[in-house]
Length: 631
Image (cartoon, rainbow, N blue to C red; front, side, top):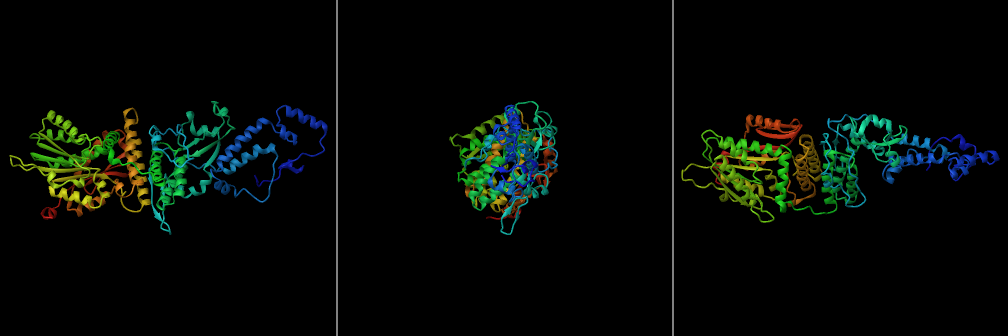
């Protein structure tokens, strides 16, 4: 290896042979005899024959430093060439082997940049990333497997991604920010070649404290030391340890994900293949939410790169219902959806003796026991309550809707509510016709007041042209007093793939943060969280890996739904400040509720994590003009 250094004095006294400076020819026999004695005392025989006094034990330290230098100088030939370009020169200078150790120390310090000041840990329970499983990137299928992350239980810092997508001259989208500041990303390009740094174990101990936990810094030693060294409880302070800045790697991880998505958009699958493998390697140094999110997005990208057809989630609706039940238990989003929708329905039913709820998202019927209990406690006694549940067919042809109806009927009998139930099995809500949902006649002649409820169902209709319009026309024909809609507060349906990918990465990073930061990660709560991650991972797969009719997770924002509902002949119903206060009280009872935020937005309610809204509840009624329109 050619290096630019000043000649050492020891090299200037002899000729150069085989890359090393040779000792003077006239060497007294007395000196030669002494050299032989020292060689016997532990000197390296080969180097001693050339006239150099280098102990064999010193060569082990040289070998270790060479290994650390190789790690610090990059992971590819192109990076090595770029890194050494400022060190190489046309002059070849050779060194005395006895000075190799000090020369390598200088090289390590020159290759490694000074340690930047890192922000303090953002979560008091942060415990570092000491138990991450190794990853492999040696095959085309070596992308990050999200299943490997299900056993990860580290506490999470806030790893939300903040993106601004901008267009360059060629019209190609670029990623924007992640982490604490934009300046960190702007400078990350110059630091890519110097992502590894060295530090003595004494400085590592001062940062990490006891037990290897990191306090206030995102640094962790790489296990690159020999077993004889790692086995000792106390490491010599002179032993250099290679450190990695996990915050910088986190920024590079987001850059790699965005670059991979851009390559996929331009159908440059060769570059995307390289990048998705890099994502898996970078993700292995992360912990908590960011590691898991990167895994699911990498898996979804890999399906597009390697043309692996995503599984048809519609064929296992029973499993989807189970995952949603765990999602209900692990975080307050579905509880918030059910509570706010029930509050709007309860207010619409005030003073009515016959009420009918049509549920487009029956699932396991978890929403309705609370409403039935509220009706049972109503002054003047409970009304007659009819419930129509709609759901997809089951793969084993079991009547799951009827089983749910039996359980609700038992509850109604216990709390003395006059209850009637019907279940409709439909492949799509677009298959419903108005006559299927019409109210039954009553001998008393009192009209039946109808409410229609949909939780996370309408966005799936956007995959089929005209399906949403057909369903809204059916709803309008039934003439409900109120329609409650809960949807994800995100735009995963419009724009090019890069914009959708960036929005999804931001959205699900925040969602995974809320799972780890606000949930119960012990015992049954840990199991609920893991299954909730699978539930969200299936959505990520649909948003990123699927296109056309197969991409059913087509979430839209509240403003987009407002436009669609207004165009279909509906007007908004203000949910009111009472629902806002009660929803806030509900969150206060939930573990870790400090991170969740309820906001009122133009008569609708949103629930989010810190400053990012994640789901939105809105209420609607048929507008007066639409009610008089015969069409």
